[in-house]
Image 1 (cartoon, one colour):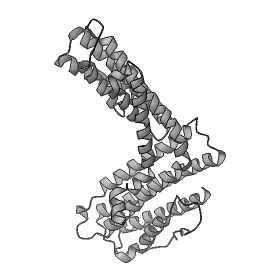
Image 2 (cartoon, helix red, strand yellow; image 1 turned 60 degrees about the vertical axis):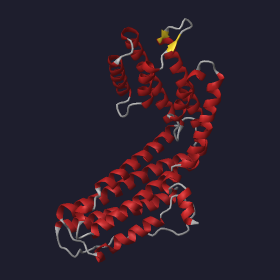
Image 3 (tube, one colour; image 1 turned 45 degrees about the vertical axis):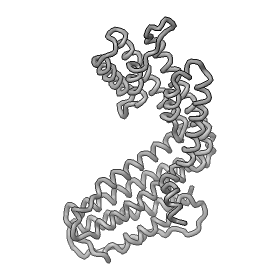
Image 4 (cartoon, one colour; image 1 turned 90 degrees about the vertical axis):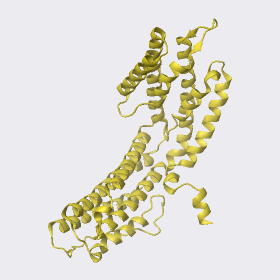
Length: 346
């Protein structure tokens, strides 16, 4: 039965990111996009743009989708105009396709240098491959731009509305779920840290840089989620919920510090070629167990997490690298104890 659940169900990390709710929202939103797109004479000619506009702008919070949707519409409009002008004067050929794509990418990066909107890229291609004709049968750049922008705009609008509606389902538990998501990531990375510190024979074969990079990226995603939730003007956060958001930000910051400290321990072993014995890491082993017991989804004090004591550890290898590792781990326990205190306030 457990194997069937694992086969059919999503991973725990995906569930903590509200993936089931996202699937439901996507189904309802794209269905609504199809119904409304077919209602209008213009947009029914380009249902692909309507439905892509919906899916590209579904977010966990509404404020992220509004900003993203506006940027996509702006980049698409500018891309459509520039490519349209090129096509009007030069026709459809390899030169206009190349220049149109280049100018679209340039303007998309001017609007948001962190990422190029795939919608803007599609618009540039669209303007050379899906040109509309007027009543006389002549190719019309203006009609093509109108069709693209109206269809895309309808999709973006529907996505924003659904993001707003579903934000009221997300916001009550989003903080605890995101914290638990990060805790789960730290649980995995701390196990990797323990294994790396214990590996004496072939530590160079065990990579730690990439797993840590993924954890840092996940922490940034959660930080952005919470920051967007704080700025959401239409979500009715009460005083306690606003206080919990501030506490959550502090917890996330300290979880990130813990990740840095764990990375520093691995880096020190790698640099100084430190050999750590199993009994030296007994306290760190206890810490990994307590980290597993820490559960941000629980509001009761059942299975209360124990604080990590500050014990002076004398490593088997008397070296600068070994002392640095255990001093770093002691700082990690300090951060953990603070997080346990913060959790009790939530």
